[in-house]
Length: 114
Image (cartoon, rainbow, N blue to C red):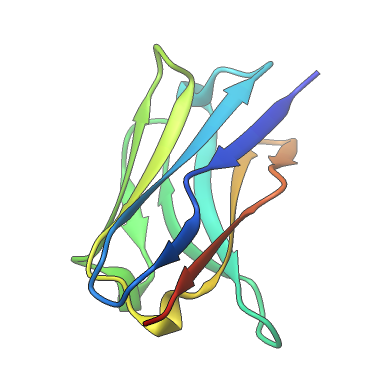
């Protein structure tokens, strides 16, 4: 059974940092397209950051230079380091693993507010 479990969300002040973790079980993350999406209330879900099986990363324009996606295959974990957070980064962040099949985690809330 495949599971993706996110953690690391919370309340942070503008300019602060958080690191999200996505622990995968039942798959090898190094052969999957791994990504972080987010969805804010009343808005469409958007792709924030991704990493391919070959290690190529891609980012939403609004987070470039602030967010970094990485993976630790030994720990079967994908991370999203988020720095210089802004109120507009507030959303539920979800991890996904995709090949011909796709899996999603339950999401973790990130709130950026003073």
